[in-house]
Length: 470
Image 1 (spheres, rainbow, N blue to C red):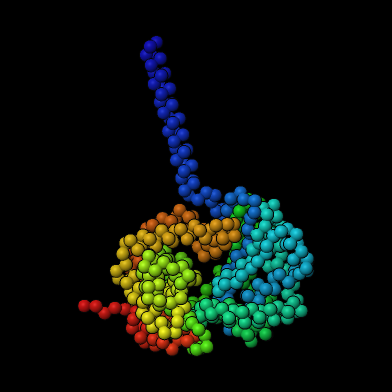
Image 2 (tube, rainbow, N blue to C red):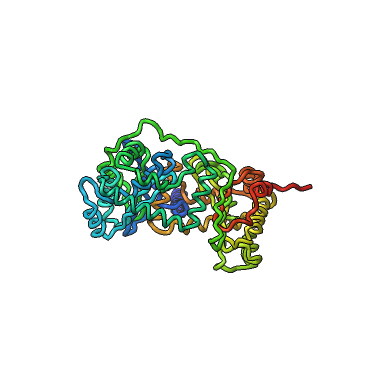
């Protein structure tokens, strides 16, 4: 009897230990789920190929949008500007809503409707209360499928875009980056501006807009993304109702190869007080394994503005030199990615007499990055990159944008924990390797606007893209 009681007691202890282990296991799973960026991004593909992706945070507001895999890169010389023109026309009324009705409906919801066009994507999105998501999706679906494209509206919007072009021309940073693309990708679609040339804007008509929609607005090239208070199953149901009839494309979207050319363009204008200069090498595309090390290298070079101060206490070598020696007013490193190529470089604004010294310091920093960047610098850049990555996802709209862009670029959304691990895995040698592969002894593209007489000629710039050492 005593033996049986002892056995029962031991069994009870084993059971209790088992319960404790289960509790601990569940607790570990909870922590793991927290670390794995729960809520997860759910993705569903409709029968016509359209993808629905969302992250439900349970918030009282939401952002929903349509990310379309078509931008100015999908245009040719004759219709360059049509994607941006179409973005403007989307809010000018549909078959069942006049422009006034559309504006009133959005205003009455207390929502915000917006759109933008880039070189590879066109985006229409709405910010609204969670309860108004069905109406927002229906409005978005209506404007991309049933836009009226009336002749009167086209004529009126033509003058609006021409005024917008004048505003862009006054933003010298935009001007420099357009010139940089034009020289880096000359003769290819990526060399075209997003707004298009004036002659095209003056001639684009309804047939051009209709042809572009019929060619590129296919279900397989569209992502309906949502973030905030959005239930994924409901969003899928709404997508089937509003976008289920969109035509599926039988052929995958063609990507016209865009050749990078080491070259320069200078627009000298001594009436301007400051020189605006951008210099870049060819980077890699979104899906290339070198993208993360290049992002770390880009963060390492950093950005600086004279209003920030810092002086000798700046962590970035280039920022420290800029502050101590008064080399420039501001600079920012950039890593612009496209599907199969990219631009990795730096843009700076400086006094006319400082062009040569600033460029010398930029190229010296690049060569140092390729050959003798330190572990401490790489660790700092990795931490800063992770911080910036998290700060940029503050709010439903940035999260929704991140979802839509990543589904188009990667066909999935990379979880934050995975991205963090990929950044942590970057070593000093990785940074040096991508530097040697993409920067060292490569022909850069240079664009300069303003009083740029003191900017070294292209041959001198090219000869500073490598070091000769004994």
